[in-house]
Length: 230
Length: 230
DNA sequence: TACCTTAGTGTAAAAAATACGCAATCCTAT
DNA sequence: ATAGGATTGCGTATTTTTTACACTAAGGTA
Image 1 (cartoon, each protein chain N blue to C red):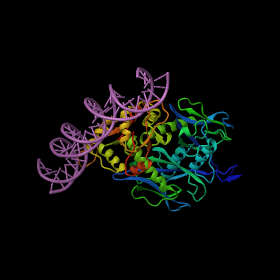
Image 2 (image 1 turned 90 degrees about the vertical axis):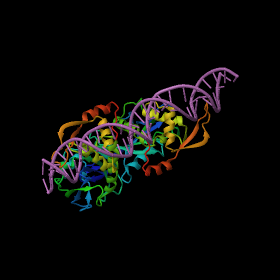
Image 3 (image 1 turned 135 degrees about the horizontal axis):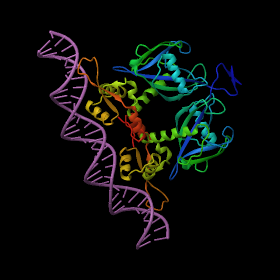
């Protein structure tokens, strides 16, 4: 038992994990194995240990609950509604993560805390436990806003990608069509993509060139005042 | 005494309060009256009560420690470094606030927790307690970033202001000169300022027209997809 | 009444964003 | 081998936005 002079809220983390497939932006949900909200869908998360930061806790929970190990991870917001958890006062620091879905598709493992884990299209979300619907809304807004002025979209693609895949990514996230020629002109003019000598494999039509995002170059340019903007 | 099965971090809030005077962007600091960091400068803040959200706590602390009552307030980031507080594990949700400095100048009261409260130019910051230097950096970056694509700058001005004052605000925050004619053209083209029939009083030169920000109009436009951008 | 300070205003040139269509390539099916 | 289907890859003209730039008007002070 641990005793304190004043009462303290419990502290948790929750993670909104985004992935992208051919046609959809998806998020990973787990079905809760225990009360409260047993059987409900929720974002993976859990309590923060005393010797870890919230970011470390978020990474740990992701690994424990889904087997996902490396990803882009950023703090989203801290939710502190007094009634947000029926167990009592629980404050939760929410994170959002971007993963290369292909690495995990159909292989997300469910841990002890979860009956199962499953990807849902952001357009077909089930009812969520706690205040997770609110967390989800904020995460989606953040992603939509941030993708336009920071090169985080690449985190959702494989290392090597075609310009069409990149364009599709933006079309799906921003939910609007883009002009192919203008898109290519703009993205290439930033000079942040390296054109590889390889081409797409196993497609039943003309194979597209593969590109890679030059993260180092971006970091260098950024510190000189350059700003990515789509 | 309050006992829990597992240990819990303590939860605090800290507030970075920005104000603007003629020539400088300023922040309000308090000199700590108690250990740890007694005598050091720090942002106002304190522990979160069990029946209040972190936002409510931030507002309460602002009122208690500085007498500031109404302001723009937004969550900044949650700091959870394991060693950030010598008293033990303390996680802090940081907020930043924008106030109309003229309302409080020379009248910020210091509460029991603070020896005194004082405005510092962001360019002449003293050493800060805890990890507050880190909090400050993030707050300043957030303000600089946000001021360009959300009309939050007005929160730093009085209700009625001249275009020159508005321009100066942006010049100070963004730390770069702007062209007068282009600035006016752009800001007026958004059609979010209402031109008042009044003029500036008591200046020893041609008096400028006064304007007001039309918040309702902005809210309406925003929901229709308009986005403020300077 | 001369002078100082800030307010208020337009235009031309450059840069960026948009709209738009067709031939080349590669695979597949016959 | 060859025709058809699917997707790649590319340039230009138009519109819109951004930038650069300087003088007169107004009001107060000495």
